[in-house]
Structures are given as structure tokens and as C-alpha cells.
Image (cartoon, rainbow, N blue to C red; front, top):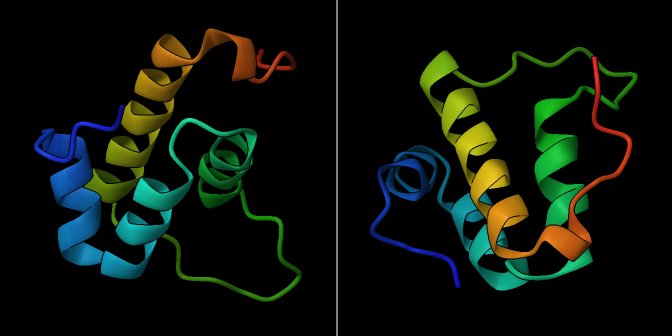
Length: 80
């Protein structure tokens, strides 16, 4: 279950409430895994400003939390 009181969720939701709401809605699903990944990787052909570093790190923390809570949904192609 998503901890809406976590510093990471609070950070994302405060600066980007639409994204926070979407994360809360899809948390615990494969859609959440894809959404969190797509937020962190530019998949658009259009130029984008990107997130402030603190928000990007918070999204990464949320992805890690989701992977711990739902290991069967975690991306298998994670690597460097």
C-alpha cells in the first residue's frame, strides 16, 4: 500500500499533484511500474524540461518502494 505520508510521495504530490494522484491510483499494479519508469526516462520525441532533481529522486524512491512491496511486478530488465 502506498504510504501517502512518505517524504517521497509528499514531494512529488506537492510539486506535481496530477502525477501524485496518478501514482496513488495505479499503485500496486503493473501500470504503476510502467508509469514510474516512464516518468524517469524520456520516451517523447518532444523536448522536455525534466523534473527538478529532488522530484526525480523521489520518483526513484517510490519506484524502489513499489518494487519492494510488489516484487512480482518489478521490471526484470533493470540493469546498467
